Image 1 (tube, rainbow, N blue to C red):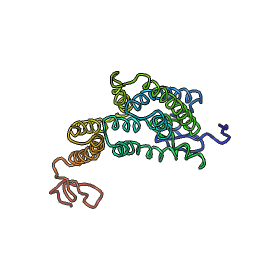
Image 2: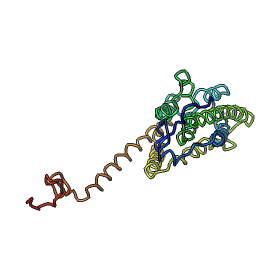
Image 3: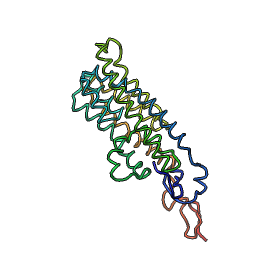
Length: 283
C-alpha cells in the first residue's frame, strides 16, 4: 500500500473521516502503527478462521457433499448464515426455508457495507471484491481504526486471513467428517449451535440486545414442536420489533409518568421565554 503524501486522514469519535490537522477528538486517538493493526487483524482472522473446521464437519454431517460444503464457504462466506443453513437442513427442514433463514441472517452485512464504504473509500473497481469480505469480524476490526490507512489495512488483513483459513479448515473438516463416518455418533451435531453461540454472544452488549436474543430463543423453542423445521428460526425474528415497541412505550411513559405535562399545561411557556406552573397568572 502506497505511503500517504497528504496530511493523514483521521476519524472523529463516530469514525467519520476528515483531513487536515488533528483536532481535540483526533488527538485523543493517536495514529496506530501498521504493525499493531496487522497484529490485531491477524488475531481475529486466525481465531475465527479455525472455526471453519466445525462448519465443514457439520455440513458434511448434514448430508452436503464435499463440493457443496466447500462452495458454500467460498461463495457465501458468512459463518452465521452458513451454520443456519446446514443446521436447518440437518433438522430436516425444507431447503428453501433453510436458504431463506440464512439469507435474512446475512442481510445485516449490507448495513455494515453502507458504513464501511464511506470509511474505506475504496476504488470503484475494487468494491465488488471487497464486498465479499464485509462480515462481522472485518467490520469489528475496521471501525475502531483512527485513520483511513489503518482501516484499510485492518479490513484487508482480517478479510484475507479469515477467508483463506475459513476455506482451508472447511475442507479439512469436511474430509475429516467423511473419515469419521456417522457424525451424530460423535455428538458433532452440537458443533453448529455451539460455534454460532460463540460468535453471537460477544455481540450482545446492551440490555436491549440481550432481551431481544432471549425472546428470540423463547419464540424458537416454543414454536419448534408445532412448526416445520426452519420456520421457528424465521419467526423468532419477530422478537426485534416486539422489544423495540415495548421499549418505546416504556420510554414515553417515563417521559410523562403522570400524563400531566401536556402542551399548554404546567410547563407551557408564557410567551416571555419563561415557564409558569399550571394555574399561575401572567402579570
